[in-house]
Amino acid sequence: MPCELCLKTDNKAHSFVKICTLEDNTTLFYTAPRLAEVQTDTPDNVQFYVDHFDETFPNPWIWIFDCKDMKANNFISNGVGRRVADLLQTEKYQTLKTIYIINPNMILRMFIKFISPFLKDATKARFKVLSLGPIEILSTLQGHGVNQENIQKVLRLVAKPGA
Image (cartoon, rainbow, N blue to C red; front, side, top):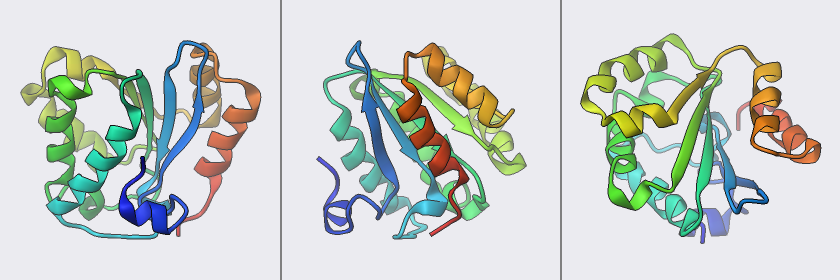
C-alpha cells in the first residue's frame, strides 16, 4: 500500500510508480525525484521510501531510479541516499533484484563510488547504472520480459519534465 501522502495525491507525492508485474511475479517500480509533488529534503524522507518499499512484499522487485534533473540535495547532501542504501542491505529488502539508475549525473556517480566500499557485495551487485539512454533502457527491460506497452510507459515517464 502506498504511503499516506501518495494515497492523497494519486501516487504522485513521491513518484514511486508501479509499472507492472512480470510473469515471474517480479514487480517493476519507477522513481524520479523531479516528478515528486512533495519535495522534502530531510533524512526523515526515508520513511516514505520504507512505506513504498513495503508495497513490494513478498515478491521480488526491480527499481528504476531516474536521476534526470536531480540535484545533490535530492538524495545526497541530506543523508537520504546513505540511509536508503543502508536499508537495501537489510534482510528485509533482499527481494530487490536490481536497482537500475538511469540518467545518472556526476554527483550520483561520485556518491555511488563513495559508498561502494561500505556496501555488502550482494548489495553492490544489485546496483546497475544505465547511462546510454532510451535504447539501453529498452534493451534492459526487454531482457526482463517487460512488454512493449510497459516499456513505453517507462520511456514516457523518463521523457516527462519535472513536477
